[in-house]
Image (cartoon, rainbow, N blue to C red; front, side):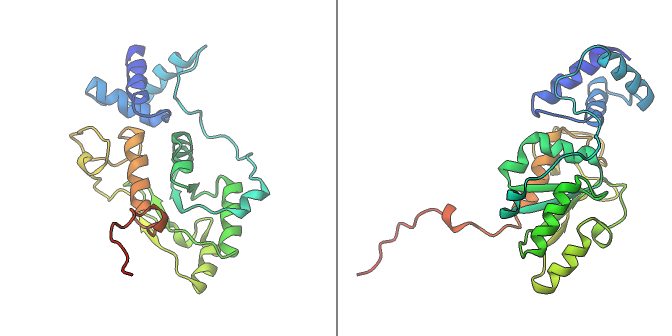
Length: 229
């Protein structure tokens, strides 16, 4: 496999997204070459490409959970919570900037980042509420809300005020690329979150969660009707 394909695939991804995962890069390379490159062949080519120099935009492999959340963050709570089934997807959303823009918190069902999970649990216990979505590959068959890291806090919260849940995962047979925003036309159905460009999945999840949020009256257009005397 030629290293030029790796560079071309990375450049194509960077045109729309500031960051991408190794799996994003693999699928982009397959699209450019018009064939399935094979995991082993791609991994070997990528290792050669990374030898001695980095690849701009490529996220590093998930590291150990060593981040800290300041206590003053307890004064705030996200507008929406997103659960994903792999740590790489957490890093992808964090690098996209959507967490700040959409006031979204994202955690993995394996309990990472643990500091974010603890922050969300404290907020739920304190009475904060936010809709929760679950984003996953087509091959993921387990529904997480009975065992995911927020389950206990969610169960307690639902006693007072029910929380909104929405399954944002890909169906077993995948979805057509036309159903995702900012996604190029692809012949095969999308079955993995990292098959389309990162911007497509980030926009899809953010828009679906935003649709669950109540409308902010401060953002509504001013009425043109004059009040009666």
